[in-house]
Amino acid sequence: MDAATRLQAERDSGRSIVVGVNSFQNHQAGEQPPARRIDNEQVVERQRTRLAALRVKRNAAEVNDVLARLKHAAQDGKSNVLDFAIEAVRARATVGEISKGALSTWRT
Image 1 (tube, rainbow, N blue to C red):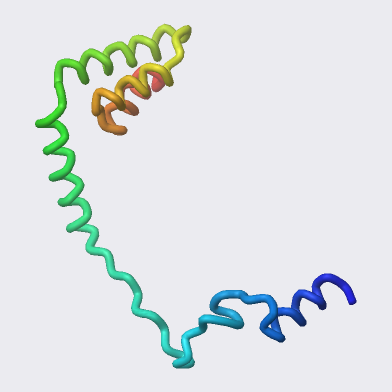
Image 2: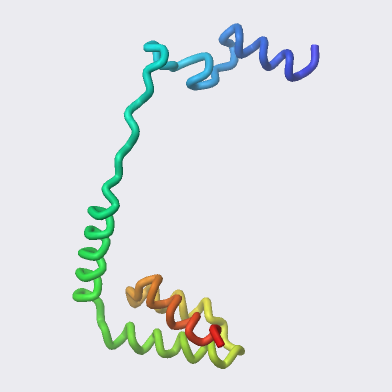
């Protein structure tokens, strides 16, 4: 008996359990679980609120300083930009701010 046939026989007999295929199935045939609905506007608003709170709590001078150093590192082409990006994350700069700082240099 080849491996595929043996595996199928184990599944059919219940010796090999595959969740949702031969075990732990929904017994009400044809019934689909409800689709998850996501309110994009609510998600965007919640993220804006979180970003505003972050910007209030963080040290703006420190963030601006590290972003300036990141931009300089991206311009000189000799520094490890990742080191500065990690420093920016630790200072609580956003991904958008970090990307903007590096990409503004590389888009010529």
